Length: 124
Image 1 (cartoon, rainbow, N blue to C red):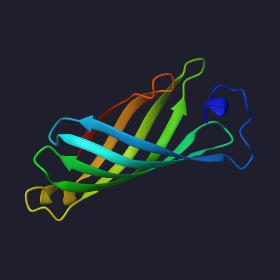
Image 2 (image 1 turned 30 degrees about the horizontal axis):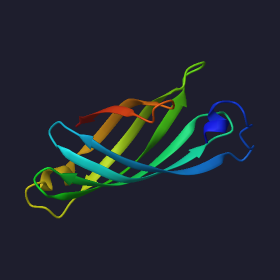
Image 3 (image 1 turned 180 degrees about the vertical axis):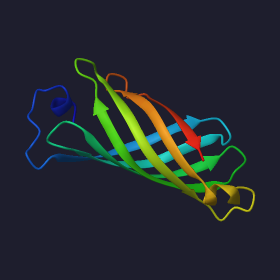
Image 4 (image 1 turned 90 degrees about the horizontal axis):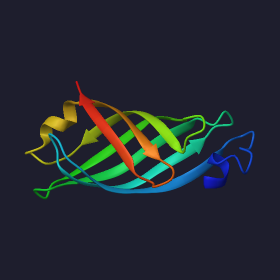
């Protein structure tokens, strides 16, 4: 993936697919750890289609499934991606049942140099 994003290899006409492991902390109305896979498809034009399938483990021990889709756009001349996503959460937890009724819109950036993602989520 790095060779394609760095321009060292051409993106195939049909695009390319990568399965990226995701693992990190988050805080806000929910707080905890999210981990799983982002099934990324790099299109021939360089943009990426995102397919997030994560498990959210809250700091108080509840589990929430996160699924989402979106796009990432490379910044010209920078090892950085701008990310835009729509996310749905679902859980059987009574304490977090409210997330089952919410839509989340996410925006953020991903550094290709460090692998760090910084994102914000906005709920309806």
